[in-house]
Length: 176
Image (tube, rainbow, N blue to C red; front, top):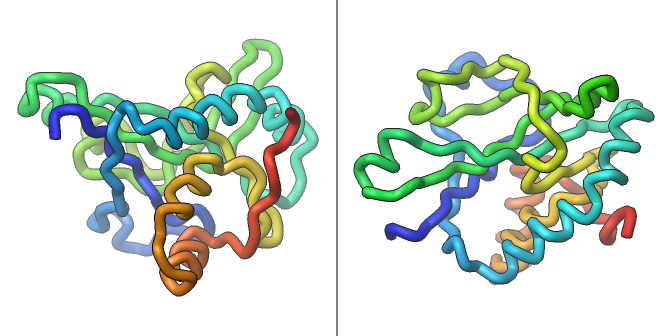
């Protein structure tokens, strides 16, 4: 358990319900050394400039970025740094600072001392562990989402997963 990363798989579309503050997002435990997740992170890093270009163009799509957050209490309890990877939506690009920003739409209680649902957070492109664009239910990017989905055993599980995150189909790797 010491070398696990918690991956947040949260609702990516829609408005948080009235009790969003009371609801704990869904998480999956992933080993730090997981080769499939490392490939997903590498793909996201290799294609971040294509994502930024799409963010700059804008449109009706939902733009998301996954960031890494250290969980202080859990890290202290485990005796080593423990992290959550959390999706922010409404991603915007600020070219004058080469900075992105996004909004928390779900947040685990373990980070509620430092962040709030609806808060906009600035971050650098190199801080992005994954990115995704969802337009009309079609996802671009989302490499860690695809890796998690590939581990589901049945088509029914995959369909429930897709419905939960609001995706009808996935496009191949963008911008390579």
